[in-house]
Image (cartoon, rainbow, N blue to C red):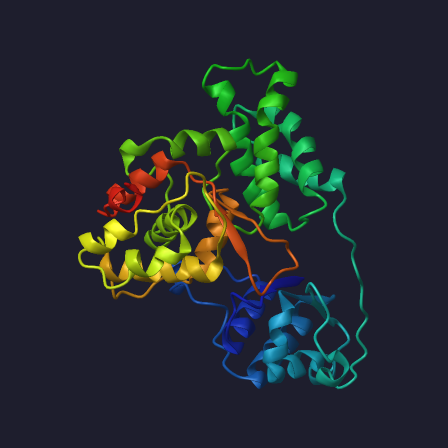
Length: 367
């Protein structure tokens, strides 16, 4: 008999003990027993007694498998008890298996040099990942899913081998992959055309590892960027929209005019005297520093909608704009003390964002 226990789900010692005994005794909670476990177990002696009863009644080997066992390092009393079950139960029939991504820090000191047998497993191969992901095939698209998986795994394998993350990315990327087919632009049997059209979404999926953003292909981004009728197109947080406006102004307005344009503003617009002196903008977008971007954003939000409210972490929103290619990094990667950026957002998107935030953009760009 065996019991499989999740150390994250079973957050207390009592839930861990009761779940183990319930599984070992094959007790099924139901309406007739009030949906309770095999027996209440809120102490180590009660847990040991339940294990001894299982050994005497059923015989054979009892195996307790503790998944996500890394968390047991913070529950030293429980870990010490589990490592001592052989002695406490007086039987070698009780076996303990810990499953974790890595051995506990200072494992020998933590386990008091208990004789643990460490078994290491290598990562999944490409073929194994394809076989596992094949189980998630959407109904009615099994053939297309089988053709898609080798390409997806090939693109993602070197960057991410986390099965949970790959399953999440695969579902989103497959939807974008099949969009031309659903739109009637490409025949599902034309694998060459499907590959040429879907190559972009595979590249985008590789860049969105562990990023919880809406799956967008470059074509979808461009279509949404020029669609100003829906209030900005992209589903950005309010703080990111203010950063986008600030980046566009920073790329067009000369740095020497920042004080006249953005200081001591009333109702989101500079004074007429200052505005006349400050009508000096670039014909082409120029790079700007991160510090200047954040300063302009703080000035705009102070007089704009939501002024005085807490902002989301600005650097996180800047990273999102970089991933969406609305901002580009103009300085080299090794230059960490003076990061320079450039704004790649089209005027249509910026103008739509300004209208959504009730911000008068023209007063800063006219002249």
